[in-house]
Length: 278
Image (tube, rainbow, N blue to C red; front, side):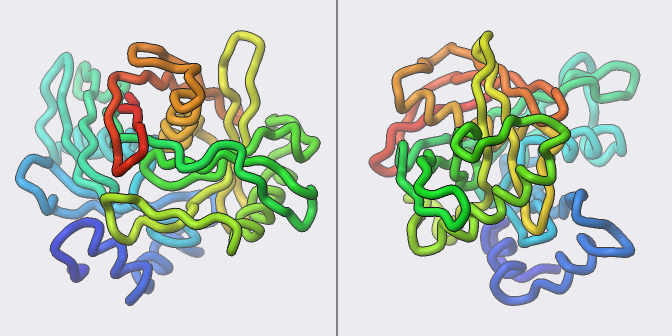
């Protein structure tokens, strides 16, 4: 077992004390840079069905929307959590907090999953960052389960498209390195969540859809529209007065996958106004 009384303590143990399991399951020959491994654990809280930690090639992360969808699907289809049709509620214990998932099920299969994510909030809007490659750019710094730097992609002279995936990945990793010493983050209520996990490029299509491109060390872009990134972006839209409770926004990935992000409520995290994303 991994030492720690909570999922957060276990994640911090992996990142700060013993990284051998993460490296074992995320590297060749068992996996490769384009893959994520989700570590399933018994929950540390009585109101959850299971716990998980997101193991990426760079470190262990507290939460991921696309990975939570995968975990719920695996738990139900493998029979680890009982499936009831037409809908099963699965409660996941994560280092970022409790995630309540609702899975639409039929014929023993999981057809779709919606997640009630942890509260998302913007720390800073239009924060100026000096970069080694692109001059001074603006980024929104926001939390959607992990911390993001959200960058409008036009500032780096690219569009979000499959043929630009390598250039986007390299730009995102370079900008993430530039953040050091320029952006300090800390979750007001969860000690240890103090790292900007990803740089996410975004663009807005004519119909209001947000095009997303989350970049991950050491060199990849997310295939999915990114649940935590869509939540962080929803928080930025909310902070700018562009989204209110009940509003929905479409997020479209680099390869065209779609998530619907809905603001189902409002709250505060520390002193920050926050949105409840689904």
